[in-house]
Image (tube, rainbow, N blue to C red; front, side, top):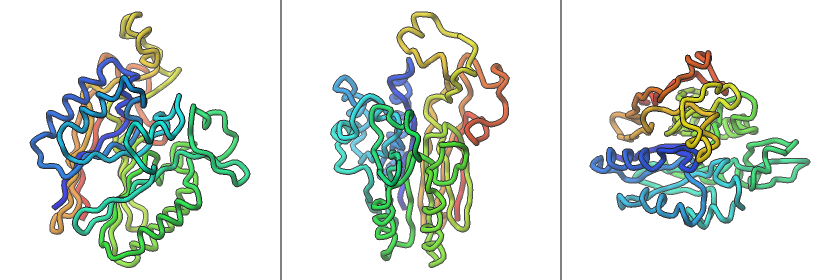
Length: 300
């Protein structure tokens, strides 16, 4: 049996209670006998003042793995994010029992066949394709899927199936085709992503694509017209005006068992001070249904 905790989009620096959310998460999972913790990206800014945040995440003395998010390199080069998170590469594998875990990185833009890594928000001014997985990483993925493991779990910040605007990975259909060729051999594949700040579960062919809701909030930008916090709070956290906070920090605990399959133990939150309904937003956002939950799911 394999057990891990997964979370995404803490955005520690954007909110007033990032430390509290991380503290609660670690307290609630400390006795769950985890094999590892998976961070799906947009964790905190890679600055020396935040090293204590990473150290706190690692304080349970279980391995912590990281996928890179689009905001992790907002004001920094990607190499600085590598150094902060102690990564040798942004895509890599690790194994437990008969399961191989594969971490992908789609934080690239492509213009006229030239692929450039995200850094300092360059993707926002790009007229090319993004997010996207470069060809050499796709070839690497094919190689990693061509072995004797019976189950693969893929982690990425961006979705491998969301087709709304630039939310999902641009060349997701190519990735889906690669995965379908593997499941046709009787192997199992489950994919986890963050980024959408939403709860989702989509099955394409025999592959399950699970969207993990963000730990902290959903972003509405100019549609967030209410101001429930003090002026001083908005000065300290300027992006707070654009978001609706979840009342609890969301995460999931995933168990992989030969008999039970893959089981996601999710959780339900609520909203703090204001909700999407208060803003007249009660349907979907970024191609996802609005909710403050991570659904519990069993995949046989």
